[in-house]
View (cartoon, rainbow, N blue to C red):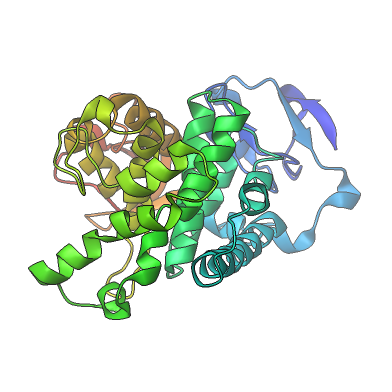
Length: 358
């Protein structure tokens, strides 16, 4: 791996590390084979040096074809395959730990549970590359435990972006992992039902926050973690549950878990529906979220996840396909998309939106 000035890079060279802007926007992923288009992209972002792989380190199997999308490039990398396997193993490990805690009254070992999740960030402290891989797993159906791992990852990223301490990052990762522990003791049919819940069923479902708190309140866990289990469905305008509390009454960790939980739930695949487009979810959060979620948490989250979609191919609601080339800072859910030779500024086209990441 060599650090090469941008003026010296040429077609055919292979990027050795993800390239980011100073504000953590992903420009190109590791493994990209440079062509004139990608070189122009690097220069447009005023990047001066990039890491290039030595020829003998280039893996032919990840060399993209000319028409391969960004997502296809990413899904073919060893990094993504390792990431997917790690998440699946983490979900199995979490399921066993929570069941042992509930059935055998064993303690929850914070460090043992959080270490595999935190290790995902070792090569990428900003979290942008981690999130980039996470949103390319949306086609896989999420179990309760996979959802919890996802929430832990997203919460950990938000904490990093908010410059929280290492200790708090570990605590909030643990809070994300066990935030839905109360669902373990709900009637199975409540969680697997594919039709709308009745009012009684919805009330039973909502009880998972209080049930979860009963499971953890006497365990040797940080108070923030226990509060996050209880309060992750509270909203700053008082419209949440189970307590209907507002603003400062809600634990600061619960406010972060709330954003991560909502985003992962809406953009994840479920047995009864396909995943929603992240941009549809982001637009809803931009329009209504600031009355329900902590503004500092929400704007930090939206700004960084919008940036993570740069260079992805998308399908618009009018069925045009193109590549996201610019994130609009004033309308994060409505970037500029290059479709063929045309540039579509979604901030000025209110009836057109991003329907799907492809």
